[in-house]
Image 1 (tube, rainbow, N blue to C red):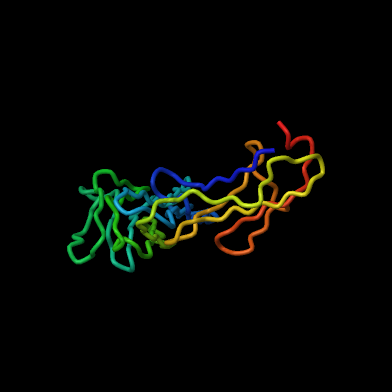
Image 2 (image 1 turned 45 degrees about the vertical axis):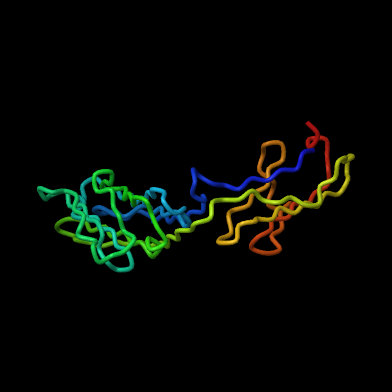
Length: 214
């Protein structure tokens, strides 16, 4: 058996995400999912997703707006000549939008900095006759420290069948706690085999069996 651990990450930003799904309602446009990376790396581009659905026979989308800490930073209004609008953000430090790269469902933040951190909210309003409003929010934190390799302790050179195994995988990042996972021969460890004594360590406990020896 070869012990191993993986830190989930995408590109240069830690892959720690916040996601929320809402049950669709029967009438009109409604917000179905909000996806905001919880942690991003300084200097990277970050994509925030706000998905919506337009029920058959119901009212269409009237507007979709994004807010950072209650300040509007982007709006999409299908019925207007200028469908996508980026209001002036001169007074909002850390917000640099890619207006051309953004769309009705995706907001692109360019070259994020520590000042980009905050609470991001998506608001969906359906058209006449409902004008119903739905919204969801999620935090984004921008850090300077890339994901660092974890440290694995407790591994032995040789294991025999039914030997007890206790391995600790500990994150080494100082600025935030990445997501820790254990895999056995390429497969995720079972939940009953995992213990998290604190926010920085994930412990694997099991007894060796034939399938652990490739």
